[in-house]
Image 1 (cartoon, one colour):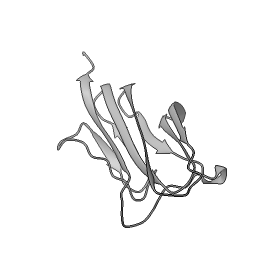
Image 2 (tube, rainbow, N blue to C red; image 1 turned 45 degrees about the vertical axis):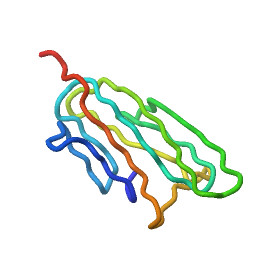
Image 3 (tube, rainbow, N blue to C red; image 1 turned 180 degrees about the vertical axis):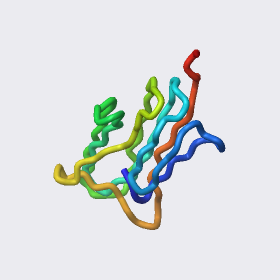
Image 4 (spheres, rainbow, N blue to C red; image 1 turned 180 degrees about the horizontal axis):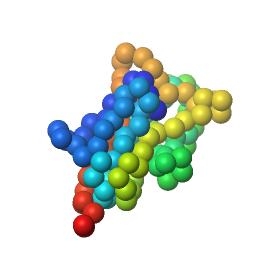
Length: 116
């Protein structure tokens, strides 16, 4: 989910975040915690995706059209080179806010490295 959001992990996070594509790529296999806070001005459904597979989905209705925060989190076991990102479908009426008053955030960190 590229754009107004950023990956906020610890310095030296065991992976890379591509701000253009919105994808995190795992470099150290293990158990990761991911969280997101996304600002919307309308209805919004988000999915946490790992390697093209939906791992978590949340939806929120916003009939008044005011800015609101949609948040969620999940724990995923990742292998080296697994990719994780957020996805929404604008064709379904999903509206992620893209203004200057607020930022959406996608963050994550390694909880436990895989035992070798």
